[in-house]
Length: 280
Image (cartoon, rainbow, N blue to C red; front, top):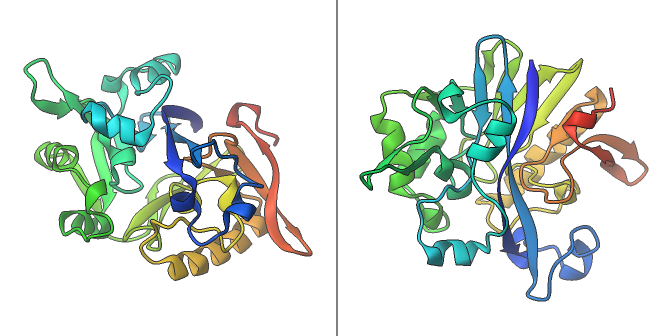
C-alpha cells in the first residue's frame, strides 16, 4: 500500500476562528499570522494506492464558487487536483474511491466541477463515494453553525451518481484501512487509520487539523462540541503515542506529518517530516 499527499488548495483563515478560546499570545508562538490576523492553511488530501484501488481522501474546495467566495477564503497559489494527481501518474478517471472525512465545502467541493454545458458534473467519473451515514444526514439537516459549509451543488451530484455509499459504523473498511468516527468537530467525521510502512498512518482531517492542535485545549472555534473534541483527542493522543502512529495533517501549511512523544508536560509532537522522507 502506497500513500501520497495531494495538496488541493492554499488559503487563509482568521486566527481567532482557527484557535478558539486559546489567546493570540499563545497560538502565535506555534502558528504564525499575518498583519490581518490571518493564518495560512493547506488542504492536503491523501492518495492511497493498493493493488486494485486508487483512493482519494477528501478533494479540496474546488472551483465552482464565485470570485467573492474565493476572496473570502483568501485562496492563493495554484489550486485543484488535476496537476498533483498528474504528478502522481493519475487522472481523475483513475480514482476508484473517494473517502470524505466530512462534507464541509473545503473537503468535498473538488469532487465536482462545471462541465462544458455549464452544469455541475462529477470530476471523478469512475469513483465510488464514501461518507459516514450520520454525517450525511447531519449535512442534509444542517444547523445554524454549519449551514454555510454545506452546498447543495457539492452534495446532490454525489447522491444522484448512484455510487454514494454511506458507512453506518466504525471498523475495518478494506484490508489495511480502519475507519473511526469522531463527533466533536462535526457529527460523524471519519478518520482513516492506515496500516502501511510497518506502522499506522492516521490522516487526522479536522480532528487534529495541524501540529499546533496537539495540545488538548487547542480546539477551533468552529467545532460544534469542543468539550467532546477534548475528550476524543486526549484518548487518541494517548493511543497514538503508545503505538508510534504517524499523524498526517490535512490543514497544516508548515508541517505534513509527525510522530508523538511523551514528556513530563504531556504528549507533544516529535520531529516533523514529509511522507516521502518517512523515518522508519
